Image (tube, rainbow, N blue to C red; front, top):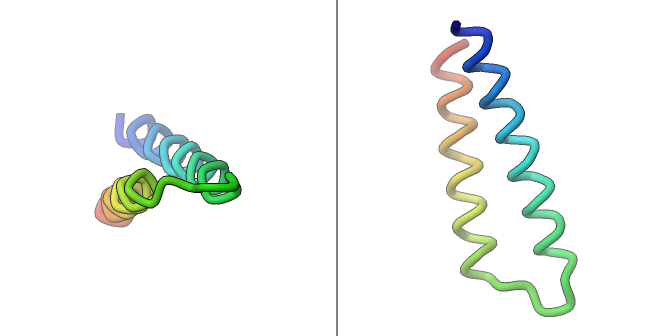
Length: 52
């Protein structure tokens, strides 16, 4: 069960990273969206490290 949860968190982290890169590469990135994605990515990263 723990492995599945970690796998899901790693997947979510990668997805957030891709979404961040996509938003940042736009001509006029939405900084509110960037900040929200960064905070969510950090929260996921903290969850990953708490489970390791």
